Image (cartoon, rainbow, N blue to C red; front, top):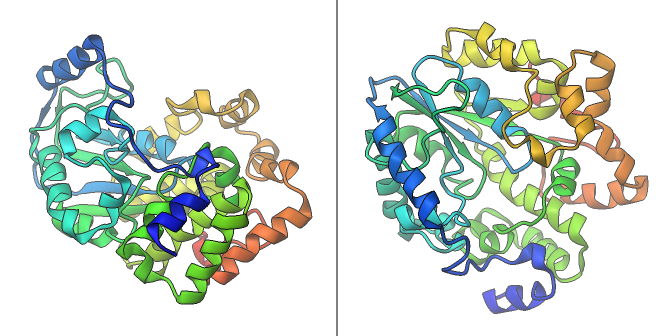
Length: 342
């Protein structure tokens, strides 16, 4: 299926559009001034400690986890540095198309961009000075990566003195929560497609031509998740949103132990606080996250099943089998045993 065929098949479905218009989200004078001011309010002086690259998918709890990591000494956050819908990201990175996140030819551009963050010369994504755990002087960065470069986790770790956290969530829960899948077509239009068999690519083409929004969302999940899980490294910290909700203390202690983070108590103090993107979660979700009631947390990781029929669940979950993914199974909201922290 050619790039033209893919675009034609997706033409009447806004949630599959990947074109970024140059003037989209053009910042006004006030927002520009705020970004400039950040460069005078923060100093980044790396001391050799590892940065953390938190890879995940949108609507998977990544902001929540990023903010928990920020409670640890010396950290600042870098929230979605590859979201090309952000005009400041486009301006500072030199990247203007989603396909560039999947092409080897664009890796030098990406490397120079991230080097700016790590050396302390790029500040436009620094946290707001009134945010939780804001620090005027920082030593380490936790990068939240939920768009693109799913085949480059090891590269980021090696290139930028990083450790990897990989956070997963049930594909249907993610698909239902997302508004669009802007990297779905770019993954299939670039060398990233070489990670999949002809049969898998044919299945993807069928979904793009004939599938509904839920199927397209689960397909995007499969394409984004398959490569990292297939190439998982022993030193990566792989955890699930579901276990993070149901067993927060176990997950916090595990993450801190694996990454050498000294103050799990700080994380636990904030674990019940919704992230700064809580406006995307309904009120019931926010209330459950602020509660320590085990039954309510149990309900939270399963509530997506109220929106999907058993037949639709079986239909879309068959895509995981097609892509040889055993992370989740039909009828089971929790991840497979090998992805659970014991």
